Image (cartoon, rainbow, N blue to C red; front, side, top):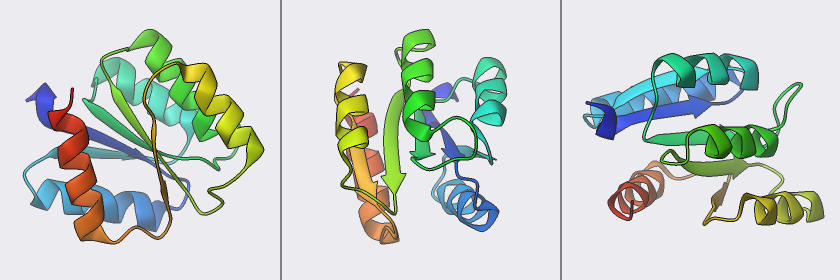
Length: 124
């Protein structure tokens, strides 16, 4: 079911795969991607309802990826995660999106992540 699809994008494979497994165990359909380019390929074939994106990715940043996803797939909710949360670049880029953007600092306690994802999906 498309309404329960979650894409996790993180170049740290252990994080992406672990989060995908956690969401699968909670009844979501989840896929992991390890780069922005791989994520764009997945989104084109398997549009998620939510994309959880690491801000720091090799090549294209998670912020730029969020802008691309939202411009092509406006119904996909985006959540950014970052180990370096408070940066001017992040704040400026998020403002360019023109929509509500949820940003969480790594590491994210799993119960908090699940609650935030549930709230974000319910708000759509």
